[in-house]
Length: 353
Image 1 (cartoon, rainbow, N blue to C red):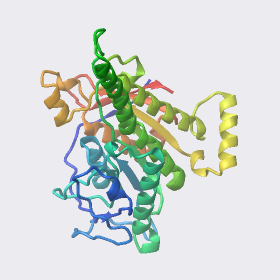
Image 2: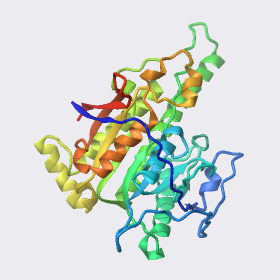
Image 3: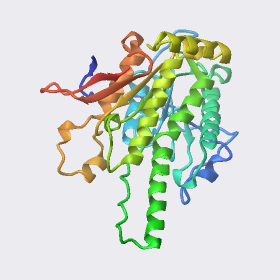
C-alpha cells in the first residue's frame, strides 16, 4: 500500500524564532563529561530575534512540536521545516543544542544525558518531561506566549548505529573471553540507550502533554524488519522501538486491531483517563539509509541516490500535520525509499499495520 510521495526539497528557511532554553537542575550533571550546557533552571534566557511576519487570528494558538534528536541532521531538518514552513512552535531535545548560525531558531531546548553516563529510563523520563513542561509553560498563554501549552506533534529522530563486536576464537584466553562478553553486553546496552530509551521517554511525555488529534512519529529502520546478523544489538533496539509504536497504536482510538484488542484498549483508555489516546496517531517511519554527511564519509562507495533525503521525511510529517486525514492508521510502520525516475522525492509504503 502506497501512502504518499514527498516532493523535492525547496528553499524554505526564511523566518527566525525566539529561543527559550529550558534546563532542569539535574540535567547538566548527567551530560557527557567535557560538554558545557548552561544550567538555567528557573530562569529565562532570551536571544535576539526578528518578529515573525506570520499573523494569527485573535485567540488562535500555534501548534507545538517536540523533536527529540533535534541537533542531528534528520532532527534539525524536521525541526527547521516545522518552524519555517508550518509556522509551528518547536521544542528541541538533544545532548547539545546546535549553535545559532542560521536564520531560524528553536522555541525551547531540553538537554539530555549522554548514554555513557548510564541514565535509567526513569531518569530520562523525568528530564525530558520536566524540560518539555517548562518550555510549554514559557511559551504558553499563561505567560503571554502564542503556544497552546500542549504538544500537537512528537518526533523521535534520535538514534545511532554500531555493529556487533567480533566473536572470540575457540583458542581465546579467559581474559579475552571476559573482555568479549563485556563488549557484547556494552554494545547491546548502548544501542538500547540510543534507539529505544528516547522512544519510551517520549511516549511518557505524550501521556502528559499531548493534545487532541496528536501525532507521535518514531524513526525506525527497514533492516529491523528482518534478521540483522552482524548488528543484532541495533536490530533488537529498533525492533523494540517498532513494537512500542505498534502497541501505542493499538491502545489508541485511531488504530486498526482485532475486536478483542480494541475492547481492551478502550477499557485501558477509560481506566487511565488517557483522553489523548482517543485521537492519537502513532507512526513509525522506516528508512534504510538516510543521506547524511557522516554516512557519506563512512560509505564513500555507496550509491547515494538510493538513500532517503532528510527533507523528504520532514515534508511527509508536515503533510500529516497539515492534512490529518492523510495519516496512516495509528500503529503503522511505514517504509520510505527514494522514488524512481527524475522527479526526486521519496515513496512511503505501509509494511505493517
